[in-house]
Length: 88
Image (tube, rainbow, N blue to C red; front, top):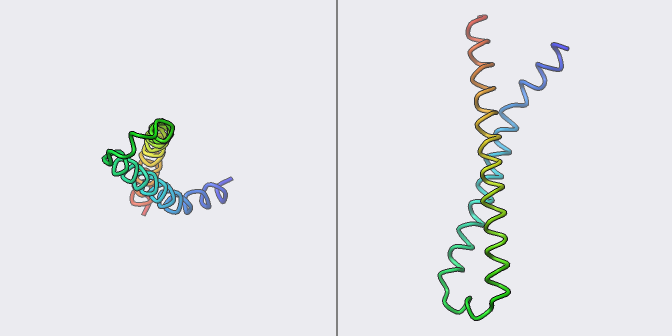
């Protein structure tokens, strides 16, 4: 059981990096949507406006979920580091 926990603990920084990349990707797409929404020509296509708004809402939700996951992983890493420092 301890070996599994050790492997999982070693993977925490990898998971944290993956979540950070996911957040960055979603935020980049959100910026692209915001830029598209600045173009007045967009509003001549109601279907496209709705599609972008739907995508924007979903991405905002995904960023919030990923941020929560990032916070939990960061706390777990801090706890492991404190445990290792205390046991050294």
